[in-house]
Length: 432
Ligand code: SAH
Ligand code: SF4
Image 1 (cartoon, rainbow, N blue to C red):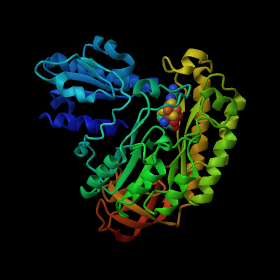
Image 2: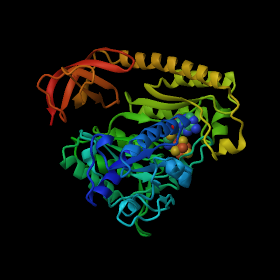
Image 3: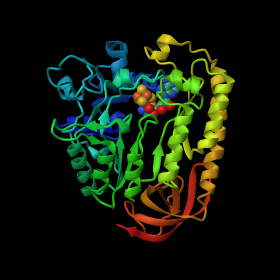
Image 4: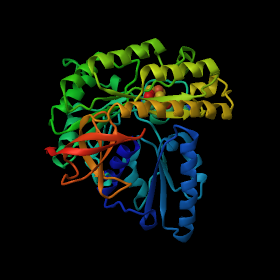
């Protein structure tokens, strides 16, 4: 989400003569795009700001601005940090050129909007320098998960005009990109109503429209919400070979008590029914999830339920966190953050250990199988190897032969770790 927002900001500023540079030390203006989702994310930003404060002592002309969720959350208070000159929230980026201009406008712009989607701004893709890209299809979130700060810092949910999404994706394809990930906090509630006489465009329809742009373009999306994900999306995925067979379906907890308290809007049974639908309609589709350990009042039994759900769902991958109380959320206002830190960490470690096993088993099942992989770049570990991902979103490393970045190759998996498939190319330039 933030990469995508940074590309919008880079375009708005490049239209006013600014150019990105590689190192903060070379910059006249530094923009820090921030996340408030967990306390650690904010702590890292504060440490960065301390460093930029030192740079400003050497160069008082340097300007530093805070963008994103921390801007909405902390507003004027951020100006108290000696490094910070201005603050712009997620819906205020159009103000940036004015805030930086010769007669600067007010240094704090954090009002949230019910309509801003930046649909007319062509993101500055030169920042990503690859063959894969993100396209924001909606902003904000209308759910009120008790632990989550997103609705407070990014505002109400709004969907972006599908025509502008398609146009952006066509442009990306023409510019050599071969994979797009459609982004929203809850893509299943995407809803675009062009006028009274026309039926609304749903997410499944948008997905098909994007997938129809070219069979050489891979399409991914995130995030699905288990309470809203319907079979129409699964059927759209089944119809288009170029829609990657991977679904990120955050469960958060395996305990009905916790799910209720988290205000997630589904039960463990509902969730497992969604998994069964995925397996039925999309055999071979991989499933990843997000899990929170140690939410308010979580008992050892609740935690055991999470472990047992993980085993039942057999997630291929997961992002796992320990609960971090965020100011003003429903949980902060109504519940006690009463699971001790060491218990949270202990439970998280058990969740991580189990997921490592599940990921390893999932990867082992792929050994000796063949996959189509989009070549994304040179492997970080070895210059002789390329890396790419399977449609199921597994990172695959293979000797590059004569293939080139941006092409599809067919590979056979030879071995694996919990994190990576090691493969060999069978057919180069499979499709290009
Ligand atoms: N919209 C997406 C997720 C957005 S945030 C969804 O609904 O699934 C990404 C993940 O961060 C969440 O899925 C959740 O697992 C985690 N998260 C959010 N708030 C958190 C908090 N206060 N403490 C710990 N993890 C949190
Ligand atoms: Fe947060 Fe829930 Fe919205 Fe996801 S769906 S962004 S977890 S409030």
